[in-house]
Image 1 (spheres, rainbow, N blue to C red):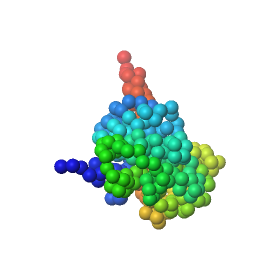
Image 2: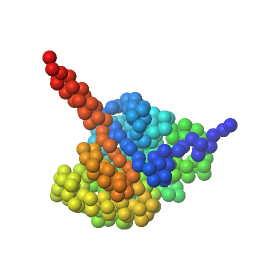
Image 3: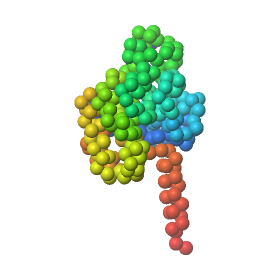
Image 4: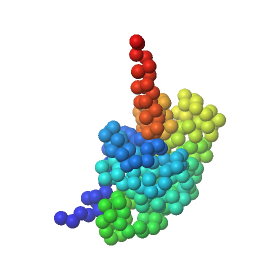
Length: 267
């Protein structure tokens, strides 16, 4: 029996979000091998995002990890280094099920990201033929485009005060699925770098969550891996996506714990 596009392409993150569940994500910044996708799945993560903004990964490496993740049912996203179509379309053509666009400050920024991420009629993404998300099978545009558009997430990052000021206009843009708050950059722009307990941080999350709820969108928590107490608070407020930390941080923490364990052995 031949498969149709809907049989093949399911974004498990979107399915969980629609059910009101909390999604966990690991950031890939160090490991360049496809093994990281399986490690993330075995660990219980729902998604990974490859951080091209803050590492030297090539598009080839990024695509290989994305394809490995798709094949085992874990959603791969890519944080692109810039908000232009050259990065966005190539990351998606390489196998990503969504892009995380940094430093989105206006509705115009958000519209450009959506346009580059979505096929017509929602955007202007160019046809690329067989795609890894569809197992390289050939489908008509009439069948493939709606399925790819529905499964491809557009995640915009709020990392400065301008984004908060324009939050309603940004979140209301058709095609934006989620806002991921980058707490570190946001507090720096506020003039309170690293002051996670500052009332303005909670206000920023509350405002963003409220507007996301207003438009049927989702809010994510980023930059708070060191503060699980605040992550819990913001999830209870309504955030539904949690960026838990990077592969390098997890590796260092585990290594440090083992080294400490041995160093403390009494002889």
